[in-house]
Length: 496
Image (cartoon, rainbow, N blue to C red; front, top):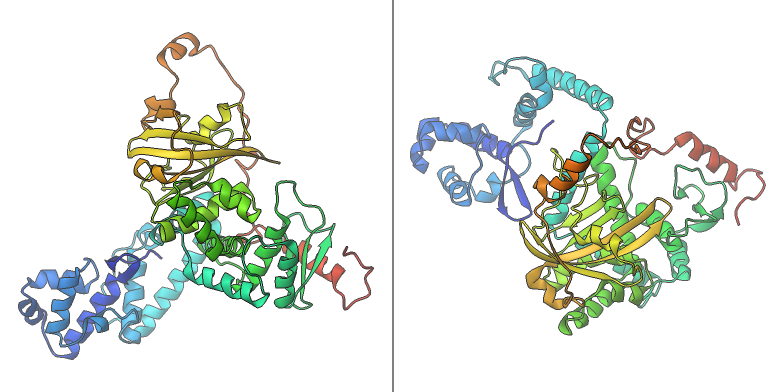
């Protein structure tokens, strides 16, 4: 079902207009007040009050206070997220269902919620709607659903500046539990964390290909691959498995839950690798000296450049008051990860999704591939439609090819960073297609109609979405693996 209209009293605090409207109606009728009477009390037309009661208009704080005064209640009572009673809850759910795209696709006219419509009738209709929605979601589990969920998640991350205070506190408590004073986290400390949480680590050669690790909560075991990818941090796999356990994550019910879980698990693992206190001290000193760099965070905590770049986005706005953006792009120009809270304009599709889009060839995320020196950081200023931005980029190699990892900020904040004196500067007018989406006129005139390249299709272009859950993990393989390694049965030892 679609989300009903909401309004915000302050950033990050959202209220449901439909719930508030129905609460106002309930309080009015309970007090024997007519629609006209309430309208006179707040100085508005009855039609305007009716729109509010039906949840079709957002309220401002002053209006909310006038409604509360007229109904002799506090504003907090109107802001309660809970429906006034079971009938109100049914009416709200019924109204939401009718406003959703699934109901509209049925070609049915609206069904007014009157007193003559019984609770049982609404429950039956809602149950049928939920089943239709379940079937529709199951049949339409397409990449579009994942992209929509990812767009919503990025918006939520932007609102909180990609900083999760509750996960920082959780990481701090775990560090204290194993006596980690801060600084780089060794593999030994990672093993101590596992032991503290009641697990032993087992390095195996037969981990199912659809998994990075498997946690056996029955026997207190975490299985990780004996040989990992050269570009993988062996600590990260263990810490992500532990984070999933600590956060009590269950099998996700939809893409939104899956993506949210992945973000939180990766965040907690990074917070364990790079403790907040030490990182903030390092970054604060660097800012004071106007020498901020992702490299120093990487070297100070012994992590990959990408992990340091991610962690920088967690802490830069919250502790340094510097809005930033992050981009990871394949050498082909396709974006695989992105985040921003500095108003930079990423390329997006019609659903607002950034991942899978091609970054402008004049951004540092693309220009870095043209630089011969891949060992030194590449710095660049780019004049973009939303302003001038400074960015630092590095290339990292993986089994899937080369990727650039970039962190940037607005021109005004570049003064805090090492590399701000670069003379590299380019102009990007994307999303204007004349910027880099279309070839120059001279090239087009020479080659148009004379070149017929064969495209290298992405291997997943026509692939169906996973049928074994949103994670794509083969449960049968996992259960067979656990049975084979179960210490309570007489299987030959396979752990190293």
